[in-house]
Amino acid sequence: MTVRDITNAIEEFAPLSLQEKWDNSGLVIGSPEDAVTGVMVGFDCTVELIEEALQRGCNMVVTHHPLIFGGVKRIDVKDPVGAAITAAVKGGVAVYAAHTSADKVIRGVSGDMARKLGLVNVGILEPDGEGTGLGCIGDFPEPLTADEALAAVKRAFGLKIIRHSKPVDGRIRRVAVLGGSGGSDVDAAMSAGAQLYITADVSYHKFFTPEGFMVMDIGHFESEVGIVDIFLSEIRKKIPTFASYKSAVLDGSNPVRYFGL
Image (cartoon, rainbow, N blue to C red):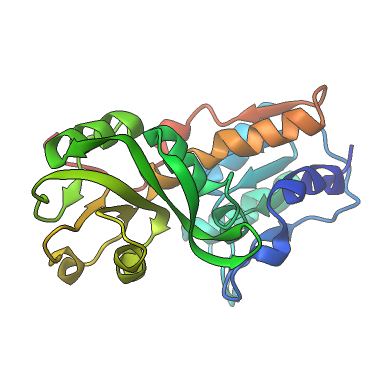
């Protein structure tokens, strides 16, 4: 088994050609021809994930967020990125990420959000190709009040807290979702006819919403972490007998903490 075999399995699901221009999805450490003993799947590439991989006999990790976004001018082991790069290189671990490439397929991040909510009539929120683009939009099977929608979202994503705008009056049927930093897409959700938009990293002023429209910010990690199971499923489906694992410390890897809950 080689690195290329693993990346091919991921890229059949989420082609690199779909990634945004600013993104750095793909293989950031290692060579496609390197032999792979096992693969560990996580969300962010951290020192802890590299160490976990090595403990399980894996010399490749697959994550959603790229370890390296822009140019690296200095590798400092006291810096989280520098420390992870150093650990991966020292341990001979290949590092691969599928970021916006996995955001823009219907079975990816936003599609997973729609499935968790049980949405029907699901399509792409912001199409940029044949069946690809950012976000999803669909309908609750039965219209919900704002309080019912809040409870349903909290339950579906296992949330501790939801930041949200003023609740809408009446019932909500049309729902837009976009995993990760979707604050800049509030207008797109409204234009698409959504009554509720669920995303993360929403700035203060975006919570001033017009009548009949509501925003929920469920957290960056919480909105996207479902992609880890999808990556693992794609690898196991295409290479069923190969050693592939989901990070055992995934639930504790969210860098955002909530005090007082």
